[in-house]
Image (tube, rainbow, N blue to C red):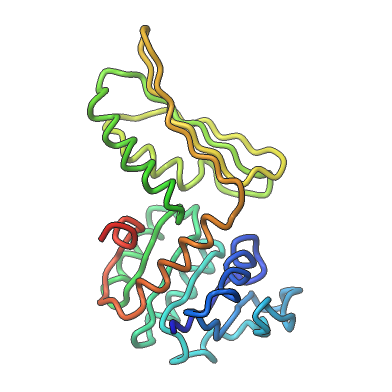
Amino acid sequence: MTKIIVLGASGRMGSQILGLAAKDKSLDVVGALESAKHAALGKKTPGGVPITSDLQALKGRAQAAIDFTIPAATIANLEILSGWKNTGVVIGTTGFSDKEKGWIKDFSKKMSIVFSPNMSLGVNLMLRLVNEAAKILGGYKIDISETHHVHKKDAPSGTALALAEQIPHKVEIKSIREGEVVGEHTVTLSTGGEQLELKHIAHSRDAFAAGALAAAKWVAGKKPGLYTMKDVLWG
């Protein structure tokens, strides 16, 4: 059984992760964290774990921590977790600056970290397909569009940026924020004669939550290093 901590417990992703974890007999949620003075403090998760704000109090109790917070909070959490032994971290937070990404890389020298802008199997397969398509269809015009709910703070999305990284030249990214859209990403490759679209639609956050939990199980006990969902899914 893998013992885990969930950081950002009352957020959209944190709540989804805790809901799935409560049904998974191979997982034991030993901590659910929110920021100090958060309205959710004291409430209980679907598995009956009280939401607290003191991460350090959980030292030595978990094999993995899942962080879906905000960049500044994630870095602060890594500062604490990096002092623990044998606790891997799964980072699903997006919107990091290049400097913050550098700090995450530095932390990974002494702890195991799975860092991915998107945890779903479908999106990670899409990254592979876009990379291959961009190589084969080198002369095609490539555009990326992404749509998310109005509450999402970063634009373009981390997934859109990851898709752009699979393409050997700069591409335009169109970001739309409307309604309660979970997440849609489309990569369009076109010439005057034809058009190819690779599209992923997330119907619920379960796809991301399930991937994050799989990553937590995988990263537990791994040697220090910076890993991605490619490592989790395909080794």
